[in-house]
Image (cartoon, rainbow, N blue to C red; front, side, top):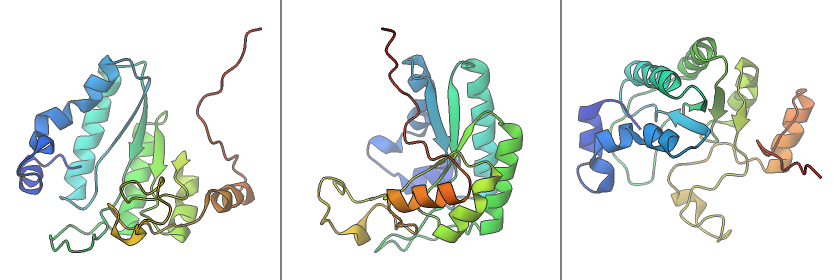
Length: 191
């Protein structure tokens, strides 16, 4: 979410998510458990994005050194307004996201980079060429949204700005010369 301890504490005053150190060390616990792929990111807009991204990159570099066999994927979701939330957040412009992705690609050439449906379709299509390796499609952010297709999608965890379906995203990727891949593994029989 954010690497700013004081901002994190203000946004999580109680409950299980209030322990910053526990959340910070989650990638290490995941690596120690034997996972071979870990996605790391910061929810941009909770705090000064420059500080959050700097700390995220420092954290990823630490993880690469401690767990060199793990594949890392980076995410840079921007905070979007939620109904009834009057908290003041930090603006992160499109040009800022472009800068972040370019620096991430230079610093971590082997890492995957996700682009969220929080972004609008034209922006997602435009930045693909910067080294985006994963993008979501047909996303729902309501609790139980995939089980209950009639749920109120307006009151999800965040507002989806790219509501294109999976076939629409696949078509766009193919049109741009990319090969849409829906899995990162395949079972291969040795018989």
